[in-house]
Amino acid sequence: MIEFNKTPYTGNEEQYVLEAMKNGRLSGDSQFTKLCHKWFNDQLGCQKALLTPSCTHALEMAAILIDTKPGDEIIMPSYTFVSTANAFLLRGAKIVFVDIRPDTMNIDESLIEAAITDQTKAIVPVHYAGVACEMDEILSIAKKYNLYVIEDAAQGVNSSYKGKALGTIGDIGAFSFHDTKNYTSGGEGGLLIVNNLEFSERAEIIREKGTNRSNFMRGVVDKYTWVDIGSSFLPSDLQAAYLWGQLEKFDDINADRLNTWNTYFESFAALQESGKLELPKIPKGCDHNAHMFYVKLVDEATRAKFIDHLKLSDVSAVFHYVPLHSSPNGIQASYFHGEDKYTTQESGRLVRLPIYFGMSEQEQNKVIRAVLEFFV
Ligand SMILES: *Cc1c(COP(=O)(O)O)cnc(C)c1O
Image (tube, rainbow, N blue to C red; front, side):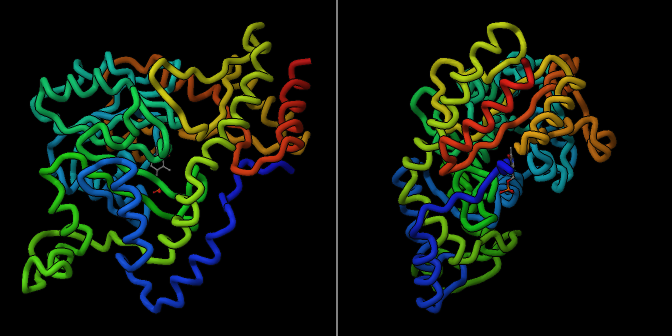
């Protein structure tokens, strides 16, 4: 069976995890966390990069940082993971969905402005499959209406938009290091990226249960005390140690995935030309990280047959994201602005093929053969 995903492992993670154990300090912000923070700060050139237990937690921190309150409206696509919406729902906000673009499955930037009201507080673009949203347009709308931009870059680690790393373009960005993403911190993990100086100090406080412990540790204040709301948004140093092994191979992992992605793309180009399926589109100016390889079948019924066929060929392929506005909790807790022209239709015909770091040529060929056979 060709698995849909395999946990990325490059070789040194084991040694670093053991080293963290031998250090005798496994709590948050110990040696490996510090290494990772410095690495991301240098790599991203952001105000502050803070490891979190998950991207979900980073998004929750973002919702707290922008002071999300009951009545606030947050604009995002419905075609996303639940955490994008939950983070703001937890603070009492109203979630306002707008439709996606069929080419990238990202929020349609041209529909955002019409969804803005006096209550709107933020726009949350989700960089689906590690392919950037149209950030210039989104930033200019945000500027015009004085809104925050929070990038859900869970899938966008090592992708860029016009040369800028995803996650560093909005006021705040969030990465995921979950097992299923390109880089992992041992199963679960995330990163909060602060780009707006306004949030720099408060981010540390919220992450440290609402205390000024970070400033105390640096000797900036002489008392360690409760100064704000917060929670425990620090991962264990074991997670950072695993991640450190992955950061050492940051570009190798990307190149390996892109190689598989490009092989798939070339192998299926003829199927696209003959109208049998559609392949992902990468707009100009977007460098992507091969987080995902999806194809779109002509309709949902064909997708079901396609998945069954792949299964019989020992290839696991999956689809995801029942659009949030049609999920049980979304029906009551959210609002779709405008017409759902593409969200439901396009998500119903999309299927993801196996792609992971270290996928062998033989494994790739097995997937390719199975896909081609379906259309014979
Ligand atoms: C994976 C993912 C998340 C959640 O990441 P976790 O690290 O598992 O919390 C959020 N948003 C999107 C778009 C994702 O793909």
